Image (cartoon, rainbow, N blue to C red; front, side, top):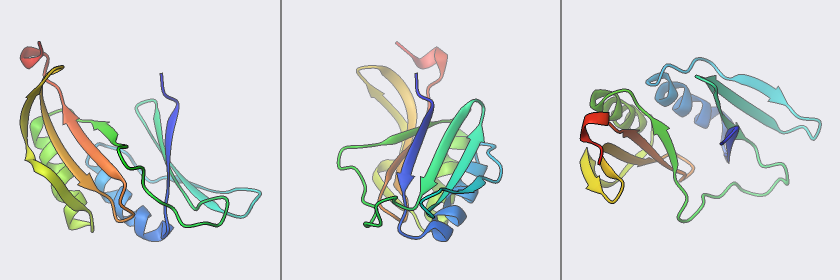
Length: 134
C-alpha cells in the first residue's frame, strides 16, 4: 500500500548518523543523497522494496513530529527488535513507553519497542511471529 515514508529533520547529518545505525540493524545500507531543485537535501534509504526518507523541510520552517504518529519498522526476530531499540538509544534516540518486549493486543501478540529519534519522531520496531498471532 505505501510507497515511502518521509520525515523532516532539523539536523540532516545528525539524522543520517542515527538512521544509518538504526536502519542498519534491519539490513538497510547507505542512503541515496539528493539535492532537490529547491536546494534542500533529502536522504533515501531503500531496502526490501520500501523507501524511508529524511528531508530538510522544503518550506524552510523547523521540522516537527506528528503527535499521534508512529512509523513502524518490520523486524525478523525479537532480538532484532531489541537491537533496533538499543542502537536507537545509543545514537541519541529516547526509549519511550514500556520496555521492549512481548505485548498482546486486539490484533494479536507481537514483540515491540518504541523510541523517539533525535527530532522527536516516534518509531516502532515490531516482530509479529505467526505462531503467536490470533
